[in-house]
Image 1 (cartoon, one colour):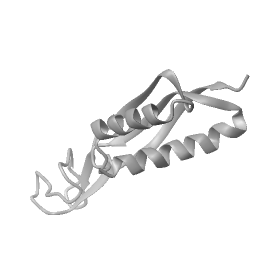
Image 2 (cartoon, rainbow, N blue to C red):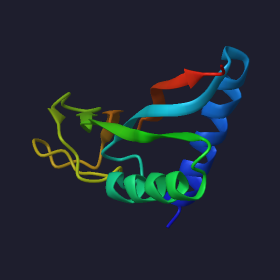
Image 3 (cartoon, rainbow, N blue to C red):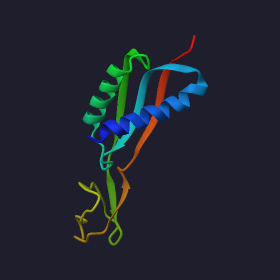
Length: 119
């Protein structure tokens, strides 16, 4: 489950950003995860829960992970039909050519986080 490694990287990035802002404990992390991003939201939630359990000093008791799902959209480079792809390599539903260019759905990023300041 590579989501454990992804969550570890996310937490490292957030901690690096939070430190100079004097934020000690995390209350919320919000991610955007594209449908084609190769990251499973349920597995990310489970990884977050494991990290929260193992690193209680890093999180508030009610800390949460919010995930915004980015819909996948592709456009055929030949007929310019826009459609919802199931995979990164796909066939245009109109002209049947394997020519879809992914427009959205591959994003994986931290949108925001909230925390408590040092006292």
